[in-house]
Length: 319
Image 1 (tube, helix red, strand yellow):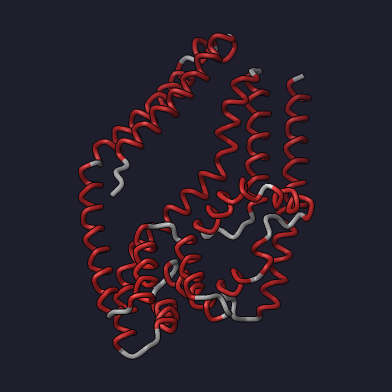
Image 2 (tube, rainbow, N blue to C red; image 1 turned 90 degrees about the vertical axis):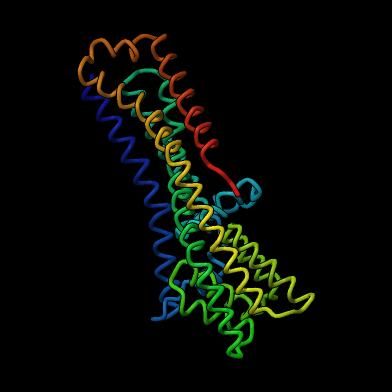
């Protein structure tokens, strides 16, 4: 009986994963190869971002049409993908969430026999793709923040050397490393291919939702309306950003104790539970076999998540 259940689980896993690879991964890889072939040897991420295929929500036509009808619900996922820099579609991410949620639910139900526990753990499994994208987006935006003062100084020097404002975007894109360089290259390409400068700047701020990018866009748009010495404005902006970084690092030092406490309090119950399951599995088996034990585990997981989010909210100081 156990062998048959395991075989059914492996077969279902293979069917779901195979279907995901056939209908999602392979078409996207084929379209990306065809796109790179059309672009030639110079693989420009900017031109790739400007092609219409990147606006599609999925490479599967039916799924793309379905998601297009509820674009307001899919838009946060699409913005998260753009901020993370990962080259996937929103449809792939959502299907990945469904796939991981189903696989996790089937696996937990197979080993525990509890539907409630399976659903609770499946919710965490379904969140993994979103969590991965959020981690990549936070890491990428932090790197852009670090590079922003250098970009502002370079723009100011280019303006003093006689470059036009739009050409300074190209200079920054070529001289500053990615990811900030890639964003400025895309900004230059967008306005160079016909998008108005204010719209290109707003798109730049949408792709990089950080406070420094909003300062930068606001300063440029205000200078276009009122005039003034733009190079001096950029120098002052670079100085303000550097001062913000000093304060930010001081805040991180002072809140380090709270963050470590959050990690310890968040990981301690899970670690203790795993150790007890290893040392005394018969006694801990009650939490899985008994319905009351399952309710207690689910309640503990919910309280664990609430506690971690509360501690994170406390130590995450915005300024």
